[in-house]
Length: 135
Image (cartoon, rainbow, N blue to C red; front, top):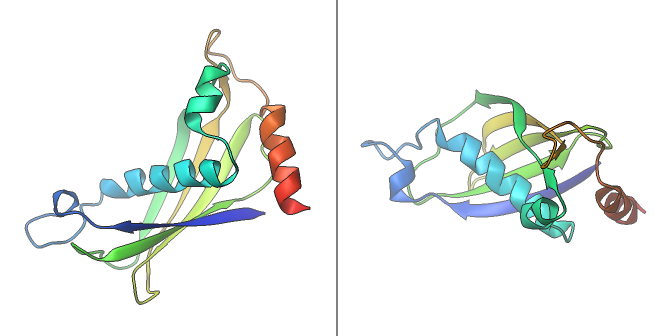
């Protein structure tokens, strides 16, 4: 439906003693991808939170194919699967400089009212921006 690619260089602190990226860091890479996906849509988590909307992760999966290493540049492809409702779902592909697939993943987040902490529908401003991108 709508995707974005974010480029990141692997930092030393993200790796183990062998220079391999620690598996727990992939969730952070997914978050970087989502954050930049929103920025590319001309909005942000900050803007949503200022408007009373929070986006907690309710599901995360990750499938490792190959290792990423210290000082490599990786590309995080973040793809919106379908039009958001009360939930928004993303697929991810992380590739290295040689375009080798390192990891695939998926997250599902829920739109939540920050006052009531109850689920809400996707804000209209996001749907409007998505419709403009897809037009």
